[in-house]
Image 1 (cartoon, rainbow, N blue to C red):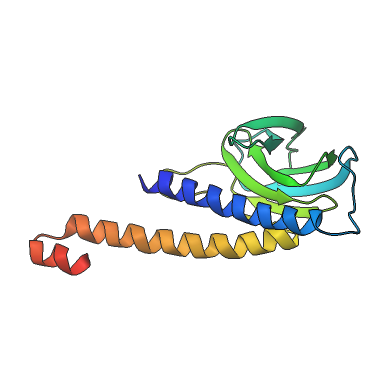
Image 2 (tube, one colour):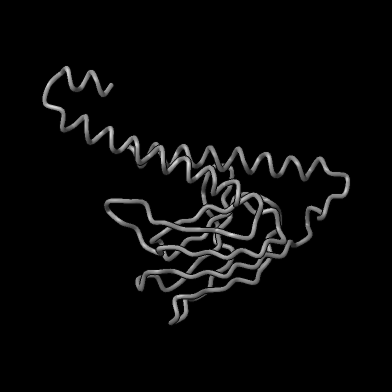
Length: 173
């Protein structure tokens, strides 16, 4: 239940940040791109796990359904690199061989450096870091707050489950 709520919250945060990012661009009289122009994107990444073999760049639509745009193979040094283009600013994701998904708010022109666990875990969310984008820096700040809140929620949830008396449960509430 908490993973579902965290995922839903993260989606809304991403949509809000993306909306703000895109609105600020479309209101700019010095618009950097036309609707049909390709926007450059460079991503250099490293995964910690030996499990994933391929990374997909995917565009998210308004119903949160992904469409694969590009893919690269992870090399023996656990590194991957994209030099590609996107058609417009928006919400994208890196799909690390269906083991880990990393949401990206892209405007075009970014040169991102990503480090990721590259696999899921039963007891925690896989970690990642994205550098090289103002929108993603703000997103990382929000994610750190969300993860801190999630850890607090989990600790309270565990304490509530372990509480033996109604008085102890009421105190936790």
